[in-house]
Length: 199
Image: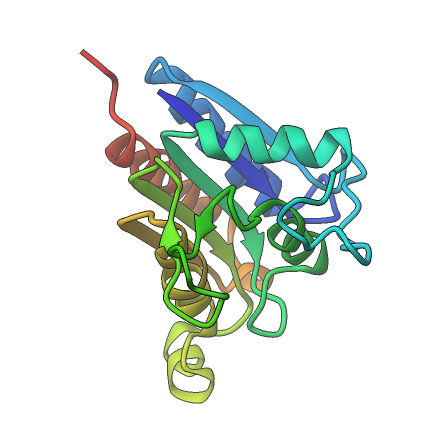
């Protein structure tokens, strides 16, 4: 099984990096091939240049690589903090540049883009790990959990991924080492459950 893992966080000492390492280790321990990208470390350019949004536009080699890997993925893992109810800009730019029409979705013949897209991704399952400094009940009450809508409905639902599980770990800023260890084990177990060892 091919697993695509994407991390969007600027600091290499962050808990997001620890979550990514746990997720990648769990997938590899189950015998899967993991294609992991730390977008910040790789210097991913999140800015979509004018003209690149066109379906037939040529794309740089790095974008082409990401497009090919996401299309070939049997499972997807995304790791990022909750910033303003959104992914960080580098990950939002990855969405803009990589989740392209005719790569991850298309419109039916005769549809000029105003209708309902057809998802093209072959991955049937995606896991999203988020960190937050907002208590879960306040997040739901005050903000309505926008990341759930973004990932489940606006992105993976549109691209054809049927099963999406999102977990939020927090409050990070006040967490203890024991809590963080437990969260890493939870992340490993979640990845192992979604992407079990093939027989």
